[in-house]
Image (tube, rainbow, N blue to C red; front, side, top):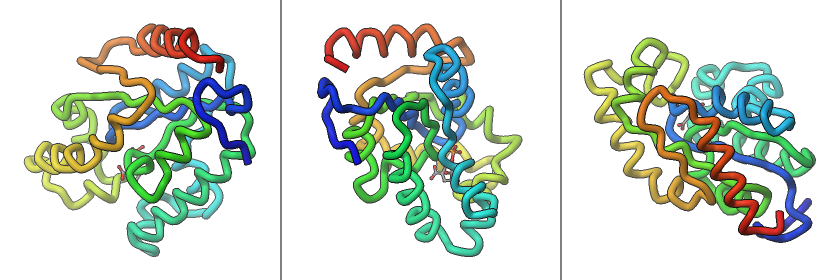
Length: 187
Ligand code: S3P
């Protein structure tokens, strides 16, 4: 297993995208991977394929604690992937020492997205997200604000924060922020 800090030559070429559900980690992760010519990995998809169950099924059968254990294990498996852009489930950096692990294995990028933008995106498909499935649409905003309050202390420790103000193209912002990061490190 590789353990390194940004600026250390041994570091894996991993970019971890974090942020609340619906902030566009998968969408922008796929595009960033294409642009950087790296493989793309969606951690939730890996868990679903490996366990043969959807994320809602895993929550139903094992509860959130069971899901978090799997999330931790599958994240650690990425130590054997030398390079990739990885989209994480929104809770991943907030449990166990996952954030510390990610920071030791790559660059953590937070997609900082206003809750109203997320609500507009999720209102139609909140039901495949167990943490929101029982929240009435009228309370989605409050639920997400609460989650964000709990999670921001973790998200804010990312190496790079990208402010998403609307449905605009984030790729140039991601590329510029990553180039700046690399200019200041030996990575
Ligand atoms: C979760 C986010 C989901 C998924 C699970 C839990 C969370 O992924 O991992 O439902 O705790 O925020 P997305 O962020 O891709 O929706």
